[in-house]
Length: 456
Image 1 (cartoon, rainbow, N blue to C red):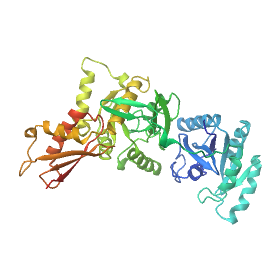
Image 2: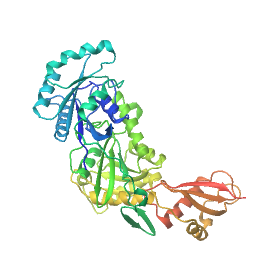
Image 3: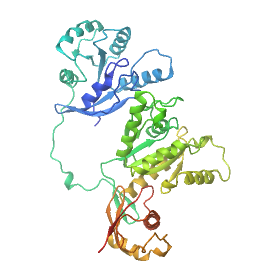
Image 4: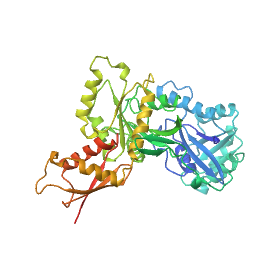
């Protein structure tokens, strides 16, 4: 059952995102003093007095604006209005009524949707008289409030959710239920439970991240323009394909610190890294026309260091002149420039044309399964007896002898090796052991963590 949607609208910089964060109970949207912080429409679940709904944040609306990004923001807001059960128009009490407020109020009244007016920035009792003049906008349901401090927001929500159905608490039998589906992967059964695969789309600006999300969803969820840095907030969306649920997050383009000057850009990069660290799988998007840049290797390092599973996606492949060895040459170049991601599979796609989207989703499923694969201790030690450690590069001192190897965790796969040497293994030996584990057990797309313990 789909939840009713409450859409927050208004001109730029009146506090829409602050109200959005207040209602959903977390700092989901970027908030700052710069106008235009929010561009794409953002969705978040919310609950008020036992009534569940979805709250939608939109960018600052400027009707009839000809510039590309404001026009796209307005188009995104119109889509949100069409999906809404209730609209909230936010205005700034400190600034009073401006012509754009009057234009938006008239536009929203014509939609015929239930409409409430949130007169924001009434932070103290002395500001209360400022709300009176906003009755001129012709919206009967007016609510003075302070989104920043939470004052008056409860009265607004009581009104907005009055017609929403209440959720009846039911006794959960989840503990008795089996997995929803099972995906076979070698000797392992990986349960496809209700938890979706969390995927972060990362890359430098203008490589096609938003285009890829829109193509996977078959809808214009993210604003797409030729201008770099169009996406600021992380846009997330959940969908299901062939019984597998995915939750994709389209993050802002990551730039080097010296290249980010606006507050919105700095916050969006911080948020992109935060969403990366919460993901199961990172899609590292490369521009096929640019090749592998220094910034690409920098961003790939973020994913590797945070122990995310990685799929390298070479986008705009339709625009590359093809030859008999084109794919091989690209692959060699990427492997040479990103040696630390040699475990990550490569998928060549065209997000614009929708090429190889099925292969990309299949690869994500395979990588997510490998991330949670567990190998029994008995099998690990049978494998250990077969490894020829004479092939390993011998570190200084006495040779390393491994007595016992066990898997201590998943996501990422973590192994504990008991040996005759205290301290951390030499890099070359650790690399040798990791490569042998991959040869035997796969672990496609996921980093492997090896911890050493001395055995007495």
